[in-house]
Length: 153
Image: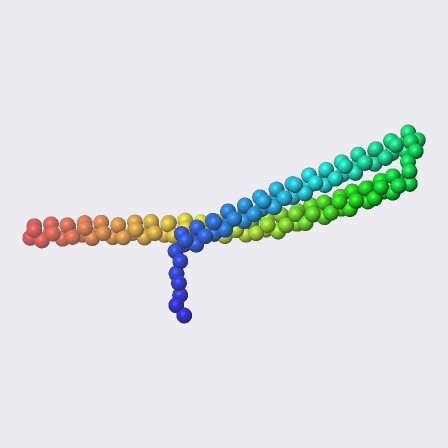
């Protein structure tokens, strides 16, 4: 089977793109978690308002029909279910954010690894280039010195 070689720069670019995507996904999940948290607070506020309203009607000794009592009870139950659903959604979104945070951390590490490899390769390339340059200069000086010796004899 034929092997394909990818340049380090290509691999690095792919990893950077993956890192950006993972970070965008994390940000979207964080926004969803913030919305879920807002929903929890809104439902809690609605539930408390409904309870206060019902309690104030009871305190005022206002006559409440059995049908109104049942409607209020059903309304409280629906709000409680809605609050539980909102809290469950919030927990799920926070869990998804945690998992995505792990994926982002892994992508960041991969980018750091290829970045370090790039730096190492650049340093090695510059060192090798400097060595070749020095060898060329040494040959040039040696050739010039040899010519001077030959012309002086």
